[in-house]
Image (cartoon, rainbow, N blue to C red; front, side):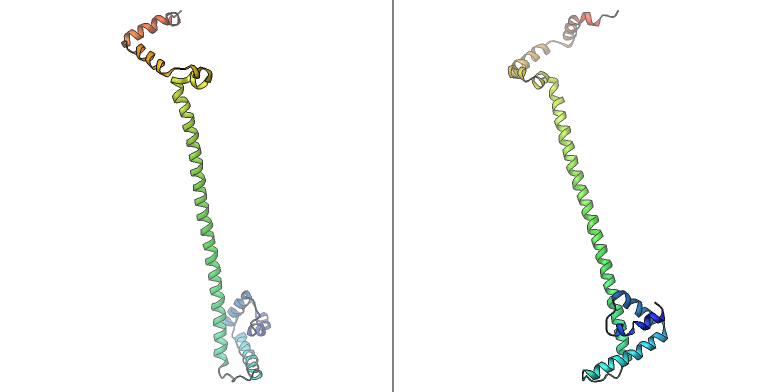
Length: 180
């Protein structure tokens, strides 16, 4: 803000008609420019003194300290509002980040559970297919399947020694094993 702009906003500042951005620039300029600070002091004394006379108030004796107090108060008020706004934005961003992380973790957990359920379902099919393949894939055969008889047959077949079973296997598949 230059001196001309600052001097044009002196009355608006005294009457509290500037927005926070303009007020901040105005206060900064007044703090750095002695000529504008003197101009503000003259206008402040004139306008505030006339207002006090019009309202039959006791006339102040130290307009300069009142003006300094107003400048400090406005500057602190704007700074505090900016800090609060900045803190609110940071807090909102942190909340969004935490919600995103938790949401993503929940998504991954749900996806993992679905994949595990699918794997478990597929494993059970393969695990039991070794013994009950016909029963699993041919339901009409399953209705006629006698588990107890199957188990008894397995026991009888496995009661012989390893060499006897090997010899039996070789005899049954003798034609398949011949090398040409």
